[in-house]
Amino acid sequence: MAYLFNKSMDDLKVAVVGGGSWGTALAQLMASKGYLTSLWVLEEEVIESIAKERENKVFLPGIPLSENIVPTLDLEEAIRDKDLIITVVPSEWLRETSEKMAPLIKPDAIVVSATKGIEIGTRMTMSDILRETLTGLPEENICVVSGPSFAREVAQGMPTVVTVAAIDPRVAELVQEAFATPYFRVYTNTDLLGVEIGGAVKNVMAIASGICEGLGFGANTRAALITRGLNEMRRLGLAMGAKPETFGGLAGVGDLVLTCTADLSRNYSFGKKIGQGMKRQEILSKMRMVAEGVRSSKSVYNLSLKMNVEMPIVEQTYKVLYEDEDPAKALYNLMTRKLRDETDDQYG
Image (cartoon, rainbow, N blue to C red; front, side):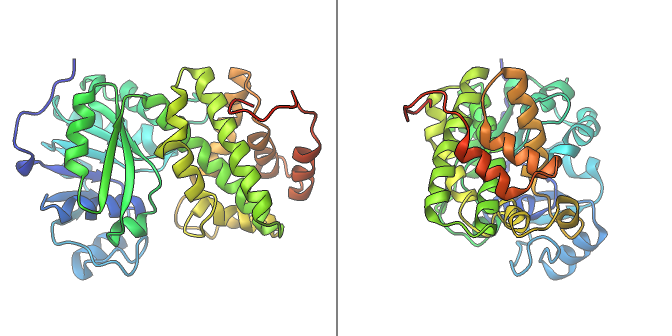
């Protein structure tokens, strides 16, 4: 049973762990509601930029930030006594960060994962990692937020709709209330696994979509990739016990369409460079922000092998990124592979 904080939402103490573009945007969202919001960051230059100029010039330039955002390099200072903690660190750092957070978190706090990915090696979701590491917290108090939401547009106050998923509907409803504004609408869901599978797989599909763009292909190719990518996402989710309807919602097709079609997507932009002939390490060496789909290509592919789920787009994307497969050949392999059947239903 979830152990919920007993206080007015007006008095909520909030922390955001991770000062990249998405973490900064979520901190701005919470601060805009009047919550004094701690923002834990790793970079001295980010601290200085926010504290002195009220702008994260490194990861979210051009967006004025609320005075209610309090940046800090001290994790304990950021999260101690906080009621709502939003984790937005890259997936590869979540376990280490969460282990450091464990002794500092109140037993009635709610932790929201806003990171999308599957851990390489363990093949665990982000909420799995939080449940495993935050041993003093009821597992029902851990939830995830996902959906079609570019950080810059959220920080600019553009209308956005997302999903928050939790095992306990009461937890989801509390987070819904905490996050909701006239421009940021939040729906609730209890299919935690399905929401996280959608968030991880869509980043891989975004890289694949960008590769097609970089190769010079058009709207026909992108539409086919998104449609078949949704089927791969659903197949994996169903094999793991997720609900099929989740993939027709915001955390499934909604986020997939957004991330596969716009240059604001780091994964899509990364894929375009791959399609244009650049190599993975060359691109990564020039990026300050993380393209989660690069790691997810490996972890989702390995997960598909473990679950014996056919995911040809994921497989070819993995081979392009990690086995130096030629992108044009990878697309040819997709177009000429032997079909399992001749149908095109929702589970095809």
